[in-house]
Image (tube, rainbow, N blue to C red; front, side, top):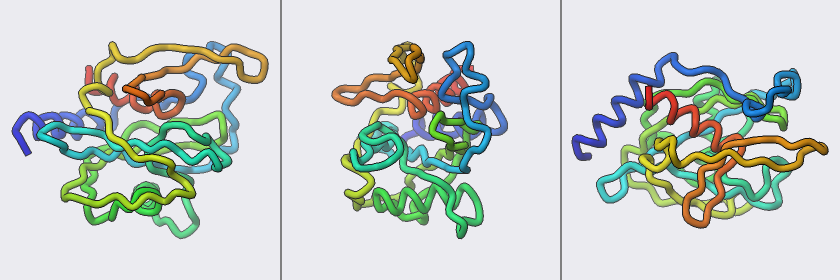
Length: 202
């Protein structure tokens, strides 16, 4: 790994230690404080960072259209905590292994972000991990339609974020988006990325 990438990873590790504030799907809506369910299911996602051609990229998935929650949306590997998971870190690693075949042994944790609460009833803990060895993806087609990567520098650039809106329960709801090529990254995933970008920009 080149020195610039090492510095960036160390910066992420340092700045994500106990920093940032909790986020939710309703952050951009003034009346959103009471809109997120109080009975939230614990969940975790893995923000997996990989070096490709001497630059750092983040792995993202396009979810299957058959899923109950967030079908066809762009997301990180992850899901709800199972009763057998000893921690949310284990949840993130287990889900990444199940969805894209990423072995836990290949991941070095480098930090975490504040929890994100979703309108669909999940309390999501995002973990950042560096993929320290080559791996061959094994996509679970039941859950994942596509696996792709986005340059980390693109996602850390606050100028690449936009605010859009759509009708939800007969009201306009606002949310972050961060377009990349043919991919429309929005909602919880974009908000979590926004949290990372804001922390690194400080």
